[in-house]
Image (tube, rainbow, N blue to C red; front, side, top):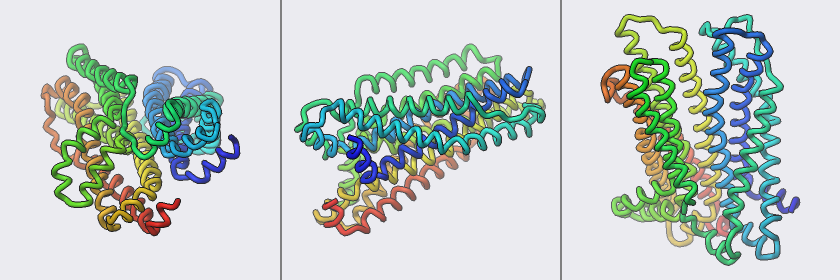
Length: 451
């Protein structure tokens, strides 16, 4: 199994590179924020400074943890699904599910440890930069020096390794269950069927987001800082819930737009066919778009509402408001970088794996231009799904917070923020997808099919 694992890693480098980078960036983020706990413990910080450090580590680091686990699970699921045929063939020649499971889990564990080791230095530098920002805003005294260890490295390794192993175990279990013949037949099609646990998880997250929105509108009407805390968490939960329901959303959107897209010719037919057959894999691409759009839009609008209300009242921002503003800016920065890398890596890995599929389409009569047109339509539809779902998720934050702070259900701020977020998402998605597809179709169709 060790030799097979190494050969598989070399043959499918794209998928594993995506998983590795997700683990690397995740470990960097985790150790960056966990170092605030080391700093609070070893620097002797007291009072408001110590509280700020702990809040920064627990609140932002906690949400970062959820995003890291989701990203690692998504990329590992994609890489293992891309190896479904290989795994089915191994089973057909006598490899037991247990041995295959150990192989895949071992690969994931090795990637996690390597990613953590390489992330130590960036995590240290990012932690110093974060503390410097807190110094510059006056939330932590200049005398408080940055500390790194033992909490930060331990949390970085433990969480990254645990999420990688758990994701590998869950994914490989789905891949190896059932008869070998059925597994071989399913390698050509990814129907995107969701387990009951995944559906239940998505619904629960949406209900939790709704609960926080209601709490913001009722219990937090006279608590500005507390309202920002509860409202700010609502869009994160809603975005995560919608991301979990991604395969179902993609199938429904593709089915509803099958007629209009079909009138666009071969490219439209290919795009619809791919989205319906591979909705599970395409959901991995839509996930970072939903997360980025929902969390960035909700947080930025909430921050803008708070600033406008404070300025209109002729007041100066309190220390608590500055702390929350810093938290929000850090969250936006973390999400921007993390989801951008997730989106680019996932698209590159998923599109590179489709080189054989593109070759088959060209041998069947499609031109390279039609293949690229289909990829462009897929990217446009996925971007649209991500933006619609992300905007819906942002409403769980914007509407209740605007109601509490500005006494308006819909804030009078214009679409500028949403347009900016949408533009970034669209550019990242389309540029990456088309760039990877162009490289894939440069290979002769016969050579691509023979790989």
